[in-house]
Length: 328
Image (cartoon, rainbow, N blue to C red; front, side, top):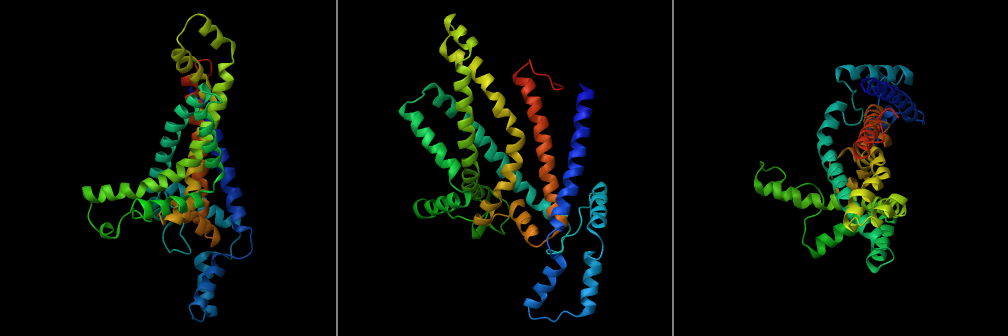
């Protein structure tokens, strides 16, 4: 067991090393740099940029060095918890990410729990009531949930919440609580603002996972051992939940490794629409401004979540199915 875990850890390290090199190279490949963005910003503000200022900025941003040299300096700082410095925001990358990571994890974990909590019972009900009116309704809602863009769904939910529920949409707090000390009223105000992004982010994953669960369960219900259990007089409820559902969870569990990082990166558009300080908008802005240390660190973090999530998914498979071993 320890040998298998050690081997998987080595695979993870190698994967992350390759991803870090590729992502850094791709970010640096397009023409222009953070320096050119900074010079354009200064010129747009009406200031004159002198050669001395340009030379100082070049030294500060290190653009005279090759991207591989910049990569080496950036990756070597990871051992000391130094992820580099943001060229556009003039702050350490670590502080920028940590200040936004909590909300990103809260939204992603909350959306993941909602998606799993709804998709499994909905998928089971839809599969066990195949071609009924509720099944058709659930199927139509699934297609809508998968097809509708998140930004459009966010705008629809915001409009409905503001016009029909009187909700204060956008941001994390109402104006009277933004700078107020923590209290029960401020906490409830936070919850009133969080339900909209949670619903929007979870909608697409819920629709997709429900469809996966329904298809898996329909396939398992046709297996011979399910028919045998029914022939022996086992109750239908026990056949469904103890035998069929448990074996239908395999593909669903395998999606765990990809779902979590996808939720974190996918909340970018929702956070931009709802004006939420999460990692998503920070990643988008850093890519647009070629702020390579910020973008590279976030991409590496998402890759780490992906490989760790896949390892956790493999472990969960061994829990729900004793026939599977981690090393197999």
